[in-house]
Image (cartoon, rainbow, N blue to C red; front, side, top):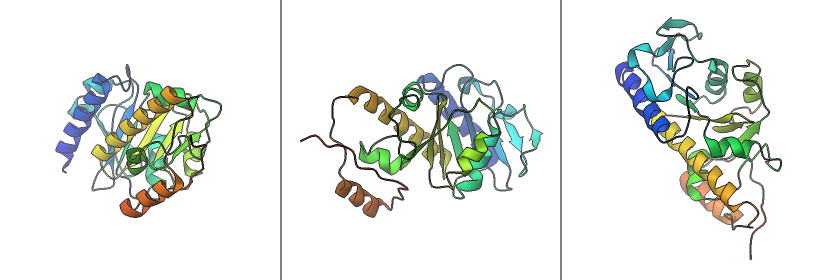
Length: 223
C-alpha cells in the first residue's frame, strides 16, 4: 500500500475507532511504517475522529519529524514496539474504557493480563502483558516495553490503556478491538467462576493457527 493510501487508512480507521467510543477526545495514537524505513504517526493533541491525511506526522527512520504536524508524545512507546517486534508494521494505542479498567485491577497477572477466554482473543492478541504506570509520553516506558523482549504483541499500560503491534494497520485495529471486547467480558464475568479454554484447547489453537504464546497460566475451571 502506497503512502497516500496509508494516510487515508489511518484517518478512516481512526475515525471508526473514535466514533465507536473506543478512544475519547484527543486520546489514542496510530503509527504505520513506510518502505523507506520512516513512518507515519498521528499528531499530538489530535482526535482520531478528525484526522487530516495531509497533516499526519511523517518521521524519518531516526524518528525525526520530516513533514506534517508535531507527532504524538507517545513516539517512544511506538519506537520500542517496532524495535522489539521486528515483524510489526503498525502500532495502535487507545484509551478504551474496559481495557483501562482491567489494567487497574489488583489480581491481574503482569505476564498474562487476561485468561484464555475465547479463541479469537488468542488468535488476534496472543497473551497480553501488563506494564507498570508511566506518565503519558514518559520515555521510560520504552524500557518497560523492551523488557518484554518482543514476546508480546498486545500490552496494557497500567492506568492508561492498551497498545497493540501487528503486521498491518487493519490487523492491529482488529486486535485492539478484540482486546477491548475480551476485557469487557472479563469484567462482566468477574467473580462468576466462568469456564475458560482448557490447556488442551489452547494447545490445539496454537497448533492449527501457529500461535506463539509466551506465557500460559492455568485458571480455575467451573465444573
